[in-house]
Length: 164
Ligand SMILES: [Zn+2]
Image 1 (tube, rainbow, N blue to C red):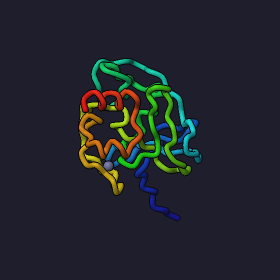
Image 2 (image 1 turned 180 degrees about the vertical axis):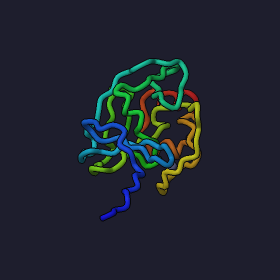
Image 3 (image 1 turned 30 degrees about the vertical axis):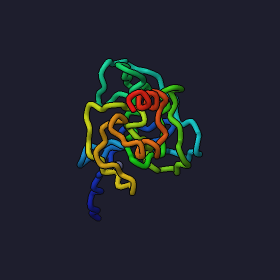
Image 4 (image 1 turned 135 degrees about the vertical axis):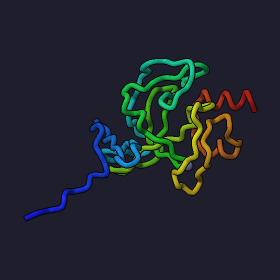
C-alpha cells in the first residue's frame, strides 16, 4: 500500500526546558512556542549577556547607551516581536517575565521597543493584533499614547523622560 509522504512545513530547531523553537521551512521564519503553561508574572527564563556590542543589531537586546547584548541562552533570540506581547524582557533583572497567562503551544512574543531605543533594522509589523503599530523603529519613535500602553524598561523610560 502506498501512502503519500507527509509534506513537512515546520521544522524543529531546538527543544528547551521552556518550549520549542520551530522554523517555517518556506519562509525561514523561526518562532518560539511555550512547552507548558506559564502564569502572569512568572519568570519564564533568566538570561545573561553573551557578547556585548556597542551598536545594535537585529539579534541584540539593549541594556543601556552603547550596550547591546547577545542573549545567553541564545535560543531566547527567537522570541519575536508583537504589538500585543505576552512576554517582557526585564533588562534590569535579566529575566523574561510572562505579562499574562500563556498557554502551552502559544508563541512567545515581546514588544521590541520595550528594550530597544532606536533599532538598527526597523520593520513593518504583521502581528495582526488590533493595536498593531505598523512600523516598528524603537521606543524613541513611540508617541506618548503608544508608550503608555506598554511596560517599558527603566532605561527606556528614563531616556524618554530626558528627551520628552
Ligand atoms: Zn504589530
